[in-house]
Length: 206
Image 1 (cartoon, rainbow, N blue to C red):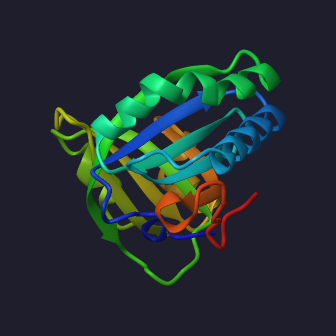
Image 2 (tube, rainbow, N blue to C red):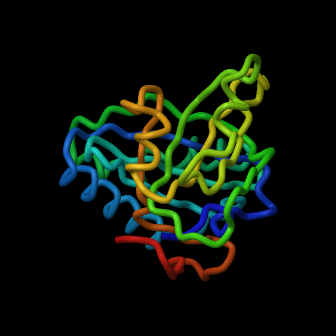
């Protein structure tokens, strides 16, 4: 599976992270495939650099990770086009729960092993104050890297961690409380494609 830093666009001024809860693996995959088809068919919005989608390993939902040049560019697109873009998904997969979008910026990456392939992405939200953040970044068997995304208020961090496999993560965090586990479903970079031309990243699943 693709390493996280291969997905990162250096020009990104904001990284948008949002979860959709669908309930089943079949609904998750249909929602993900429909959404990526909508992105591929539409003209690339000004300011959007990349858009990636992950599927939860328990089959209950999916995670979007979008990179834009700025929040202002994203908000301009969202006001004009978001409703139309997701309408087909909501027709095919009614009843999706959307807890909300988190605006972040990637501020720090701690890489413990740059060579092994990633088998699992784990996403968690922790308070910046206290020991929780540093504990998330500390070396552990199977932890390849962790990437810290700060929220605009600087009080919370969304950490995207790369693990070799689910067993290693379970051993380090029994029960997975406070964590969501994902695999990469589809990934493409808008700044490397012509409008309407999907550029998948090698190693993505879908």
